[in-house]
Length: 264
Image 1 (spheres, rainbow, N blue to C red):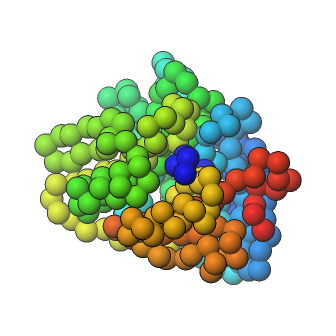
Image 2 (cartoon, rainbow, N blue to C red):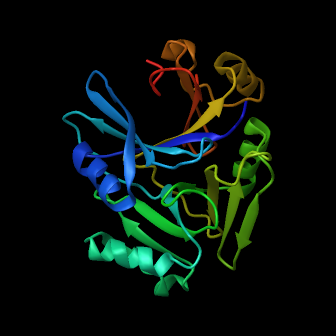
């Protein structure tokens, strides 16, 4: 499997409001849309995103609302050029975006805002990647050793791409060893106090792009990954496993010549 992250999925209450928010404030464009039976999915991303970059998937279940964001899911982080954090943050403030943590409170290194559904969006400074492209997705884990072992053994991710360890928590950035820097990375956050987390229903899943869906699924099963939704159960279009904490991980095989991004 390539192991690159293909997209991150968030559930939203009002799809068009959320799509408009990402288009207006982050300059995202609609990459594709699927109208299902009782739900709608939209893929979004910046116009100039890297071929190996990750998209944002917004899912709306018709007639349903999401009750809880949960704290097991953390945030997505989007990129702005080095030295331009304050300017882009101020632009968002001028546009009426909800502030969460300004650059000053974050030591001038990053900032946070919230989208219409309360999902946290971190703004990080990078000298690579398209403006507002997804840099990483953060999830909180209850056991760092188990989480690191899961991603290194099941998906062959490198032992952390980078890490930050403080007196009370640690951050581990994981990804395939040969991934381009423009790809999305996974940030695992571990708090030392032994707390547990609530998953919530507003957080959806991560999606990993694979070379051969059935072969890579069989490999995951050999490595004792959770059989959550097998390819057969999903009409051989995709599959799902879960990590040690119950975070859902989708597997999808991309056809570069397909007319649609959706395998339906």
